[in-house]
Image (cartoon, rainbow, N blue to C red):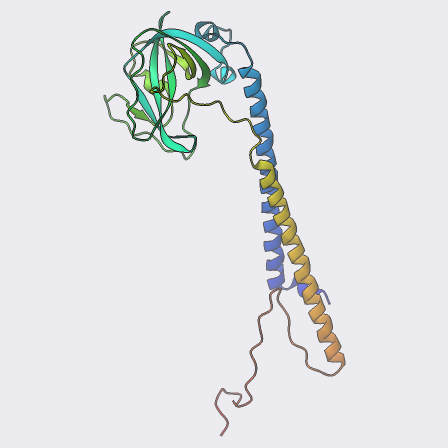
Length: 280
């Protein structure tokens, strides 16, 4: 009765079902891992944002300073903006496409720090920074790096960078005259105050859990649905074979059912011969 389950077509069916279940369950657990990573990220950001702000010089001078562990902390800096502004393109904010304006800040104590002054709509010219000395409050950010498969920025020898895809501090520092801090700042507040014509400061990261939990549940439901479909297909084939056996015992000719998805049988012609020609 159950020997048909080991026929080649059924074995292939079993393998496809098993592979689908394994892939879907794996994707569900992957989404759960993404959820854990998201929660860990939220905890890190919340703890660092709540840390009181410190002057940038003191922050950079901390023993064992690491840009990654300092990211999202609040810091203050004073100086004068330079004119060498760079557009960080392909950005969105509040559902609008545009660019971020990256402006070097020449620090009072020497050195330079890059300041992401904020967002401007696509096609808008970057607003000129204040010509006077400024005091800024910003969030520390680590230098961005190209991830595997990410696009690279075009480079022209001896040409200054005016647009860039990612804020790669090392690349930008090569065209600035002075020592550049190993971190950049997302501008939060400024004295003199940020005006209506200035770039819109970049908001802090969203700390929600995202859709990962719902996606994980969906993948697990899909895997259960595939398993239930396999059970129904097996039960249907068993039922058909049971009926075929009963018909055989009753002297009737049963119909064959050898695959998990039986095809409709073509009716035999009563007007043709065995060689396909019409009888004379």
